[in-house]
Length: 299
Ligand SMILES: [Zn+2]
Image 1: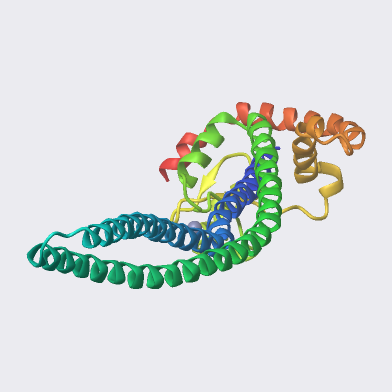
Image 2: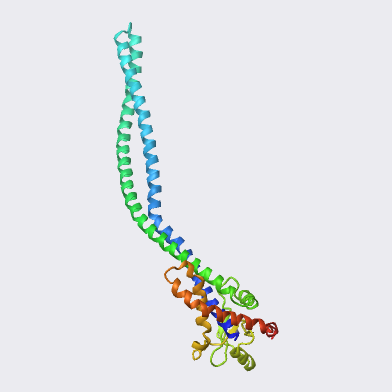
C-alpha cells in the first residue's frame, strides 16, 4: 500500500523538476530584455551627447554674436571720433584703436562662420540620430511586449506548478516529505529513484541488497540507497496500474488542486478528483501504520 507514497514522491520529484525549469525559464528572460533594449539605449546615449554638444555650440554662437555686435558699435563710435579729431596725435591714437578693434571683429566673424558650419553639422547629426533612435525604439516595443507576455505566461505556469506542488505535498506522509526535502535540498539533486529491473539503484546504479529489494518492491518501508542516499521506489506497476492506480490517482489529485484556476478543465477534473483523493487517503493511513522507516535509515 505504501508504494503509493513512494509513487507520490516520484510524482513530487517530477513536479519539482518542472518547477526548477520554470524558474530557469523566467530567469532567462533578463538577458533577453537587455539584448532587445541595448541598441536603442546606445543610440539614446549618443543622441544625448550630440544634443548637449549642439547646445554648447549654440551658446558659444550667441556669445560670439554679442561680441561682434559690441565691436561693430565700437567701430562706429571710433569712426565718428576720427572725424572730429583736433590734432595728428589724437588721429593716430584713434586710428590705431580702430585698426585693433577691426582686426578683432574680423577674427570674431571668421570664428562665427566656422561655428555656424559646425552647428549646421551638429543639427544634422542630431536629427539623423533622432530618426535612427525612433526606428530602433519602434522595433524594441513590439519585441519587449512579446517578451513581457511570454514571461507573464511563464510566471503563471510557475505559480500553477507551485500551487500544484503545495496541494500534492500536503497529501504525502510528512516524515517521508521531510526526508525527501532534506535529500533534495535546494539544488537539482535526485531524491527518489526507481529500483532497476536487475536490482540496482536508478540513480547511482549501485546494487541494492536482496532483502532491501524485496522491501522496496513490497513498499512497506522507506528504503534509501546505501551508496547515494536516494529514496528507492519500485518501478511503476504497469500491469496493475488500472487496479491500484497509484500514479494516476496521485496525478488527478494534483490536477484537481488547480482546477479552480483552470476553468476549462474544472468539470472534468472534479469528477476525477473523487477517486483520486480517496486513494491518497488510503495510502497516507498505511504510511502511518508502518512507522519503522527510521530503522531503515540507519542501515
Ligand atoms: Zn544509489
